Length: 603
Image (tube, rainbow, N blue to C red; front, side, top):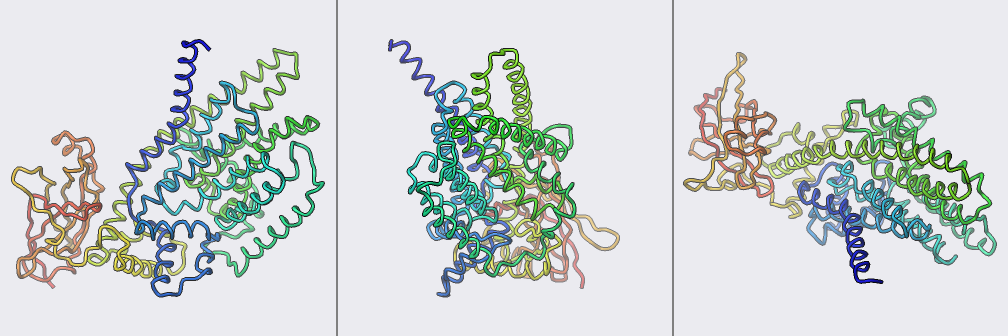
């Protein structure tokens, strides 16, 4: 090879590596930027219980195996518990672990591309690039910013491993890998049982042709372990009382079908002027029709073992997405079609377009080699190009629209962190329910759940698993940072007004100059009889203040306004000086705002 050609080849290879790595690196930056070290929602039901039992000496196998919602999350629990012990429950480590699991999925797709002969051309690179964009789509913000979603990424990494291990391994290795990895999938998520069925599909069709000769012993072992795992999964299983009936999908088939379509097309539903639900249903229907067309073509060409053998892993990947779609619809269709569009389901729904990309490429090349009609080939090529281009535009619009969700999620997690850090000082059940444990209204005994999880927060703080440490006193001086002369102001306590019914409303703006960001929370204090400022309330930023952003020439200060109604029952009677403090949950520091107001409190 000439030096010029060798140099050009090196540059092309470097470009391809950087392009393939770019989607993963973008998500890594987003996680680093927007991730917050604070537990959220279901995380309070997982690791804390294990740690409390460990400290009491009562931790056992059953605690990891215990049912969570409709799932048996033995392996995700094991991973999260281990990480908690190693890192003192640093939630950001869980977020990066999820990212690593998705990188494993990307590696598996690359290996599968080689196994199925889709590599070795420019088209192979662009297919893998498109797959990485879908795999690392920012639409998965809910999963990437919630450590608990290791329970979604782990079975996905396991299943995509199966897709290339089975076709490229000897019989015994293929069966042992299928059994081991299917067990992990089963005890990670409710739909994990489909891994057994889809793995069996690949095991029965080695090299694209049905063959069970010499494998009967392995098939019996596979079947026995599969049945045993399902019996173990269902042992003492109880359907969550607040979930819809499993018969809803049968009673309302139109609603169930719409849910399945919306789930399948949710990746492309956002960022347009049209209703996301209708876009998702339309795209999902198109994808499923394309998949059925691919299956029909494979059926017609079933005697071509090479084509069938190369196509089956991609067919299986599509079936994995469809299976999880159907399982979710059976359990959740009663929540309505909009529920199919939640961010956390994108993890599985993107497997459908990824599988279709490679599958359609294999079938198109095969058809092109079998036909002499260039007009037919050009027509099909044009149609597929228009469809893929349209989906690419929809994906781009959806991804751009989702970036706002990352910022909003960080804001909510910081509010979560503020509520948790002040749980011993300010018992605000409404804020706890909104930011820390947002159970929906249909959950029974909601007040009891909130009380129990407040105690869990306090216990985890006492054990030292929450960082920074929880605030133990309402004296602001314990967390206040002295302001140096000439230091940038952290905001103003603008006004206090009294309504006709005697309620006081306070408002102002607060920022964190060191972070160049609006403060997500503002603490309110009163001076006691000894002149000590004591915390009694918290206000979360929800008022736009473009005037502040303009005056301080900092765009991120736009959402720095705050407003709150004072709970005067928490104040002793008499003349009380009220002050406000910008609060930084990540450092657990308070910064006094300019302005002091005086009110008269009566019994």
